[in-house]
Amino acid sequence: MTVLELRNVTKTYKMAGGGTFQALRGISASFNAGELVAIVGESGSGKSTLMNTIGGLDSDFGGEIIYEGKNLAKYSTQELVDYHKKSIGFIFQNFNLIPHLNLLDNVALAMTLSNIDQKEREKRAKQLLEQVGLGEHIYKTPDEISGGQKQRVAIARALINDPDMIIADEPTGALDAETTTIVLDMIKDIAKSGKLVLMVTHSERVASHCSRVIRIDNGKLLDDVEQEQVQFLS
Ligand code: ADP
Ligand code: ADP
Image 1 (spheres, rainbow, N blue to C red):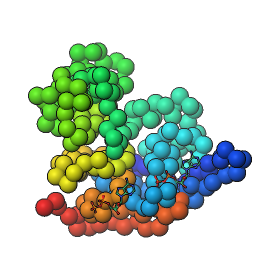
Image 2: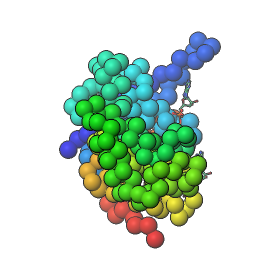
Image 3: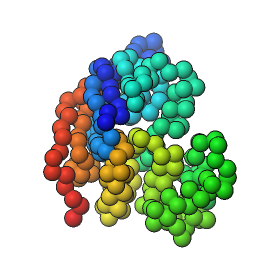
């Protein structure tokens, strides 16, 4: 099932001095449910711009982004905000947890479905925290847990609205090799459960575990390779 389709997507930044810079130069690709896609490329090649555009952070792009059959370019601002909040789970390199909230609240707060009461939210947040192995730590704050544990909280948070697509920007970038393995295994499981996962990474090792690798160079799609034999972590 196709979840996301990019048709000749372009993005031009307006520079402070009055000039422009074209960060995306016609990206086309189609993504299915259950794929784990690595987005790789040099610094400045356009990876973050592509993730932000797909993520609904910027409506000022060219071409078409079709998510579950609907063209983002035609969304109103409110529709784009709803899409950003409800349809996608985000995972970041630096976790982006709220420091003064405990883990349970960090996860529960991301729940946007309005017809669910507080008790039910906390129940679901607790279940997800248990699922990522943090059931005993739910009343701790982020500064009381390790980096790997923080990323597991972020994974629980990304799943709270049961989105069909996960966007992960360097999710293992701040983690050591051992913790990377744990987090990557969880991300693989998310894809296995049928979600589309788009993951920016600088790590060849992390990319080698993905079902598909997309290489961006100077705003263009240089390479789009399916990896049949997905390696397993040693
Ligand atoms: P990557 O994530 O691959 O490092 P980016 O998407 O962050 O690349 O950036 C792609 C290009 O767009 C870079 O040349 C960068 O300098 C430029 N760029 C990014 N954001 C802006 C912006 N807000 N205004 C102008 N240029 C930008
Ligand atoms: P591996 O896991 O394959 O050892 P690394 O993640 O350590 O790969 O990094 C691969 C390459 O990407 C290295 O040359 C490293 O310097 C570079 N790199 C890693 N993270 C970043 C980053 N956030 N920004 C820019 N370059 C990075």
